[in-house]
Length: 311
Image (cartoon, rainbow, N blue to C red):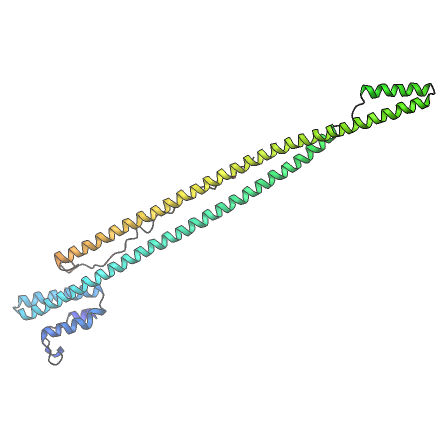
């Protein structure tokens, strides 16, 4: 399409609509085709028009050369518009790709750290349950050994031993009434001593179990403190890495914005200086080129999973 259009003979009067001049025909042809053309098409058209204009100039056909020049200027304006439109479109695409890449990395970051924290909590709960189970078994074993180590009955006192000797002596003398009295008194003393012993024994068992319980509670508290400290450190690491991730995105976006702004300024300067984004030779293909260097950034480095603190 573009080649055929570019090779239209400017002197061909038959192509003019009724009542139209050559200059008006230029506007008709440009408006008819220009919106459908790509930059490559415009490049080819301008190249052919430049050749025609120079040919007219060499042959002294200045009116036709002027018409060709008008067309060239119209196509250059359209090329400038399309180029800037494509440039802005490409910039918007690059920004979108950077944002999508950052969002994907952000989601991956959260998935990784959520899983890390979930595993941490699970391991901490498992370790605490194991510690509590060990404490329970230790208490049961200690209580059993303590009970076995303390006799259920106290040793007879010297008073009781003496009264039993007296009781035996009276019985041998067949003084059974007195022997019975001594026996009753001795039994009462034995019961009193047994009650005292039971209180003492129970108190000793209870105190030693309490001491063990305090020791176990201290051990449990220390474990929980280590878990809490490790959890805080893990959360701090996550926050720091998140800040680095956000800072990396902000740096990439800032650099991209600066580059895109510089591109736009350069294009405007080129248009202002040369009248077109095309090179004056009209011989090069051009168009906004995508820059993906800031999109393909390295991902954040995942930290090794912090081991749970165990005994």
